[in-house]
Image 1: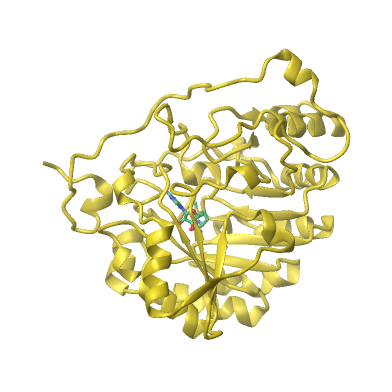
Image 2 (image 1 turned 180 degrees about the horizontal axis):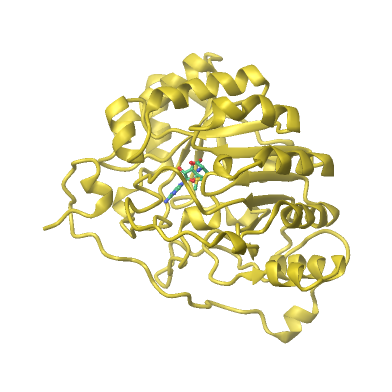
Length: 371
Ligand code: SAM
């Protein structure tokens, strides 16, 4: 039996053959005409289930300088031609319209956002729009160099992905790069004022699941909130299996057994965030879990995404997209674009359906959507 790429990378034997779960794009459900007609064209950015959308994720590139096992294949990655990416003026225009429709927080992501040239210029334009929160997710490889410029451009804070605290394992998971510059980049971000630095970890059975306690200890000793994200069926290799997911309940129980935790009440912008936050009872910091697989939070989801090629997605697992690029490049007005955003939100399904028997993973993987 040949191990799938994810497990081969870590040397653990797979428990069962890994299925190729990639499937073609399928449209699962579309609202009928009367529902579409009922869409409000003024007021908050609301969907058919009453969820008001306030959070925008902008992917600035599908390219990445790493090949993390849970995200990208090691070889033969086909990236979008540059002409298909929205330019900064176009991305800013989308963000301005979303802000006008009531979006209050924006996150820049990718691919790896810090490898797109002149990224601080985009951050400055986004910051000038007046969002309450401007953040960015990065793998940390370019962060130490860019942190002062990003902070000066108006970035508020960063999430840095880091899936192991062991040098050799870190290298195997990322298949490129080293741990120490990423740890140093967190210091640099804090020195530049990009606080709090949150640390994203995707624990995977047989890969890095034995490091849950080490990451909790890291959160306690550094004061950096660690976010444990359940492994989702969005890896380009199609190696995801349910039994590779480390459930949030297990993560919390293991940490709580060593250092008692208590739930933190959600407030303000946090109230609709996917993260469930817990602080250590002894006052030494906090951790969070993002339980997309075992405890989906679709009922409070207020997030909208724009891919690097300008497609609006109302869910990570959506099968439908609306292309804003065409409208942007064919002279679409503010109203045309605002209507598109409203339509994307209005068409959102009640849930991602990841636990339904009929669930089909989307054709685009995480780095193409923007994590
Ligand atoms: N390149 C940046 C980075 O590494 O943080 C931003 C993009 S990355 C796609 C955003 C986040 O998605 C990272 O924390 C990454 O670990 C996470 N991610 C990627 N693939 C995932 C998967 N299959 N399941 C859960 N999280 C995933």
